[in-house]
Image (cartoon, rainbow over all chains, first blue to last red; front, side, top):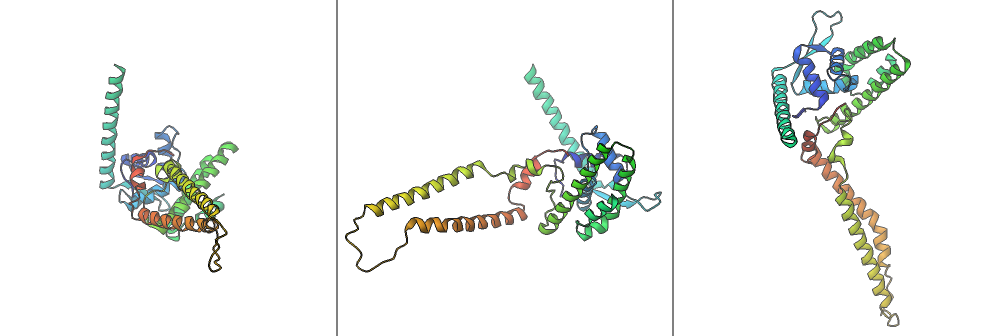
Length: 107
Length: 177
């Protein structure tokens, strides 16, 4: 079960799906690109995370219409999007708080 | 190489293989195609990463199936090593040392008392008493093993019921691949 706060790989997977539905390989590449090569998921790790997210109903799986071999793709569900927004709010709050505290300390 | 990955996929539970098996192989195939023109070192690194990922994933899925714990165990993300919940508390070592010290001191005291008692009185009837320390030392490993097993079972039950505190700690931690 995924819980907040999210781990970085899971957060990046969800962010990858936030813009558009993606298939497994595209998610791998997107995660790597978003993290500037810092987070490189193995296929086993990616599918472990996808399985959990599917189980928790944060994402859903569907067959891509235009793919020749009925390739499966993933997209966020309403619940997944809501949880992602909650996480972003949490991170914003932390960032704001950290900025204030650090600024106060410096001044 | 795909044959090798296919064999590794056999380590996963059947249900998982049925749902994701072909998809995982398709991703691995795409990766292999993309990396075929890269240097040998990069290709080797990729194979090692994927192999480790599949092995960890298989272990994680079996663990999940057995314990019905849906929480990421985090072999996958390296968090396993970082989790406070899996550390052996330092205080336990101190307490165990104190207890052991106490037991050994008691044995020593017992021996001192036994030697200080005059032997010429002699028992009324022949009594075969085993020395205290031999009983204690002989039984101690069994004693510790028993309580260790009881503790382990108790912890496993709490972990399965998500009451061990590990899950709460897990939610507090951050990590990266």
